[in-house]
Length: 547
Image (cartoon, rainbow, N blue to C red):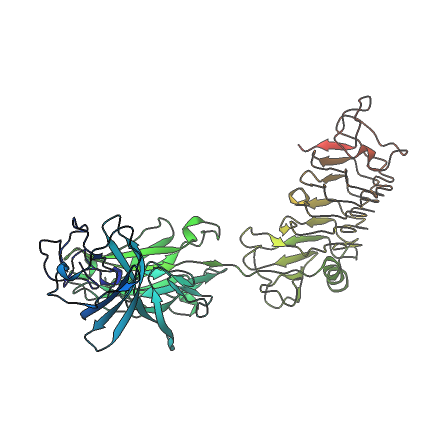
C-alpha cells in the first residue's frame, strides 16, 4: 500500500490522516489503498508517512542489495503487483518523489525498513513550515516530522508559544514537535500580570485573531483595556451564538483562579483574577482554559489564557551603602528623632522624600522614607505580599552605628545569598529589639565578626535559625552586649570551622545559659558557644534552646 496523503474527508490532515490510502488491493495484499498492514507473500508495504494534500502520484526508486530497481509510478489505480518482494535480510535504499497537483515535487528519502514486522518501508518526507507574528512572516523552511522545528531564534519572552493553524495546537517553548504536514505557526502572546495583578493578552482557540471556525460556534474577542478601572480584568464578548445571549455560560478549568461575571448584555463576560493568588500557586502555571457554551447547539469554544504572575526582581545595595542612607539621609544615628526601622505594606505617601535601598540596576525598587519617628521601607510585590527581599551578598555594616534605633524589623529580608554579616548591628547602642532575626538563613555566611558588638541595651538575641557551618570569623560577635541575658540558638550553630573567635562573648557580663551557666570572664571565645548543659555538666554553654 502507498498512501502518502490522507483519504478524502480525513479529520486530522495535520497529523497524517486516516489509515486508508488509494486504490484497491488484489490477491497479493491490500493494494495502494486498503487497510492491511501485512502481506503474506512478502510484498512491499510503504507506510502512510506524508500528510500532504493534492498528491498526483509517487515515483519510487529503490535499490535492493545494491541493484537499482525499475522506477515505480504509483497512483490511485496502482496495485501491489508492481512492487518488488523484500525479505528481512535485504539491504534497501531508495527515494520517493511525491508529485503534487500544483506542479511541485517533494523528495523523500528512505528512512527505515521494517521487513520483519509488516514489511514496511518508511520514507522521511520534507514538509514546509512558516512562522509569523503580528509584524509578518518571521521564518519559513522545511522540516521532518521526527526532527521537529527549532524556532529558538524567533521565540521571545512574553510568548505563550507557537499556535499551529492547521490543528489549533499550542506548542510551548522554542522547539515544535509532534507535527506533520505543511503547517503555519503563529506567535501567540502570553497573558501576564505584574505584581499589582494587572494582566493582558489572550489566545483565542485556533488563531491570534478572532474567527468563527465551526458554523454557529461562538468566537471570543478580547477587549482588554489599559485604563486603571480595567486592571485585573479580561473583557470578552461572544459572537455567532444561536441561543438567547443570557443563556451563554463561561467556566474555567482552574477553580478559584478567576471570578467570571456575565454582563447585562448576556454576550459580554468580565474575567477577573483572584487577587489573593500567590505567584507560587500551582494554578498560575501554564494555561487556564475558559470554555463558553452555547446551550442551543451544545457547541463550545475555548480560550486558553497563559498565566504568569510577574514580580520584578530586586537587587539591593550593599550593607555599607544602605548604612550611609540610613544615617546620612534618614537620621538613624540620631536620638531621639528616629526610633524604628520596619517594612510598610503600602507605598510611600504622596510628597514623602524617598531613598532607594535597591541598586540602580535593579528591576524592582525598594524605597525608604521617614514616617514620624520611624524609617519605613516598601517594595512592590514584596512587602505588600509577604514576599521577602533578597539582601545583597555583602550585608556587612547595614545598621552599623544606627544608635538612634530602638527597634529593627528584618523579617522582610531573605539572607540566603548573604556571605558577609560582619558589623551588621555594630554600635546600635539603644537597640532593644530585633524582629525577624530568627528567620535568617545563614548557610552561606562566612563572617559574623562584630555582628552585634556594642548592642548594650539588647537583652535577648534569637539566632535559633542560624546555620553557621560556613562561618570562619566570630571575633567580638556578641562583644560588649552588657545587658544581654539570653541567646536563643540551636544545634545548627556550629563553630567547627571558626578560626577567629577572640572575645566572641567579650564583656557579656549578664549572659546566662539555658540551664544556669553564668558568664565566665575567662571563657569569652567559642568554647561555650553551644546549648547549655548546665554549669556542672560536661557541656556548659551560653545558649538557650529556642522556646
